[in-house]
Length: 301
Image 1: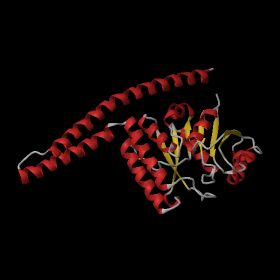
Image 2: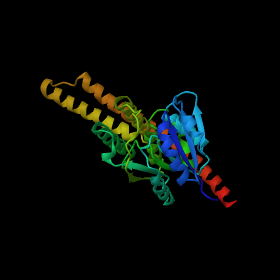
Image 3: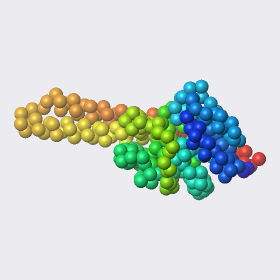
Image 4: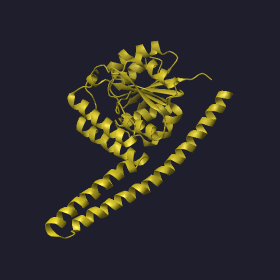
């Protein structure tokens, strides 16, 4: 069977940008399904989409970028999903490069923005920190954790929809979920164009959300990568404080006991979380095997 492709664009008040982007997409990708998710826009986003052969989904109010992605993924009928922003940052001519990598056996391909294309120095530093932290949590090098330009196999992406937050952290969650589930992910370098209009991401507010998402997903898929360093740090602090008080006061203090006890508790929580995570892997693996069998059966027919 011929592989089908859906391009999903979450859009909130992007009428001006869609007026320039949609003609190019519809011309260059006539064979693709184009899904635009109007996330409670108050401008002419819906009216612009009505002039082009696209599937339009409209939220009655703004539910968030992640919620728009989930709506688009559920509606899209393609075997392969391409997600891109509607603000003009992502170039349509880069889509074939993403799809070509999928043909090589990858399950997710992410467009990694070159460092000089980020909006500001603060954003570049924040992205470097999040990339490093996520790399530690997953055990894989992550080039661009927050890029919203990516191509994935729909049958795998649907398995993680329940994990995706409704805000701007869907790239963070999906990338870490694929890595920790043993699904091959790769990156291709892209240049992000300057967006028209003001970014909807707030560095401090959404930055804190990204940090929490990294910790949450890391704890879900690889708990010991979080709890073991915390346990070791608490144990070292307890040992250091005990050595200090023993040398200066010749006694074992309550603070040392508290640090040692907390260290043991953190380690035991990590062990328990590993068992829970193993159950999640088992369920996810069974679902993926079932989906693969159905897909192979449909292809043979």
